[in-house]
Image (cartoon, rainbow, N blue to C red; front, side, top):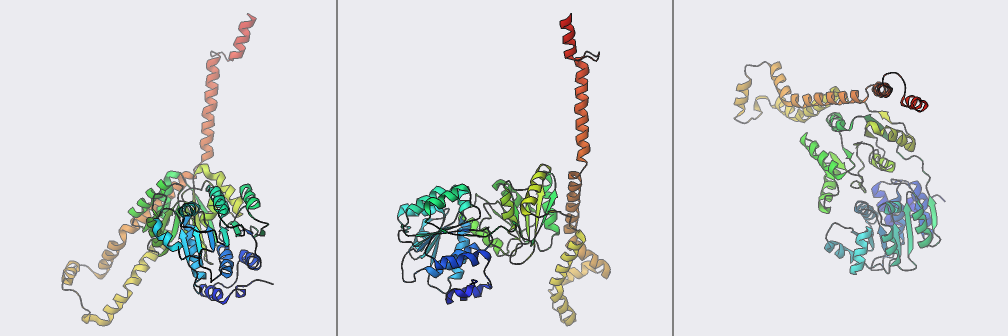
Length: 494
């Protein structure tokens, strides 16, 4: 029988309907019936972004005991951002139930988290904070019936596997462990064999590592020109709402400051922020009070925003799977997105590797056309004035103005209508449009330099090396054309 959401309880069906979900994803279709029908350990292998959070949240909510008071399930997440995302999903699904959740992670005070634990049926935690609260006696998991490990391979990469094992040893012998992972490296397989009891397994085959809704492009530039290229894109791409990825926290901080200098609404996510600052930055971006989020890979983990239009890589990431995670931030919910990667000359080989990994050809990014961007900017401003224009035309002389208007009229009285329009247009747009033209010109020049005749330069370097060798040979032979070896033989014969 094919699984559908209608096989769930009425409370969950209502919540799912409110969210607009119509049919389950592949991992949901395969995992949920198994988890509902069996009292067993479970392993699900599926990529990030396939809907696996719902694949364990829905059957978990279905299996909880509404009469039990205490923690019934512990969910482990490698990052606080992902923990928050899981909690958000649980709250949406459980809106018609009485179950309460608590999210616990480091970087914030214990007080509120300890208070939330007292009423929670489900706890979502990062490993370190879970162990801290366990030692303090605030996290009571001895009666928990379910233990869920999300993104187990990420736990391994971040060095949390030993913490996971410590927590598993504190659980009851009959606890049901559900583990989800995108990959199955040997340490994860070993954990599964040693700690899980004959688990049911579900695998979702890899189809493509990147979405067809994401147009992938690259721009080959010297690294010193990356900022010029980014400014050009931000000044010309219409309705930009995107994420710019950097490798380090210092790059993230510096870049966000430079983008603020050109008038962009920017927030940054990096390791120097405390939890309150991180939550504020995330909220600013999600609510579109900021149009650009500058982040490291770690900073963007758990970020779930459906309307991101662009992802820009300030250089190719060191890890290829990071590239896949980055571009997966756009092109969501059936919408299309654009991924642009700035590629330094020495990164060309990595570019080809990523194309093979994603099984998609990356196109050469074309310099934006400034005329279209300028037209749109003018149109936006005119639309803002439409209501005011209509009121002035309809009311005529009855349209009320402040008494100081006569200074304005006096200033413009010796100008024709055409000259007044030129003045107003220039005053409003000249500075911005000049900046666009200059930035694009710098961008084009940088691209031309990076695509210069590199082979020719290599030949010249080779010629110089060849000349150096010949010159050394002449010096070694004393000018008579004989090599050192020949002169040595001659001396031995004498």
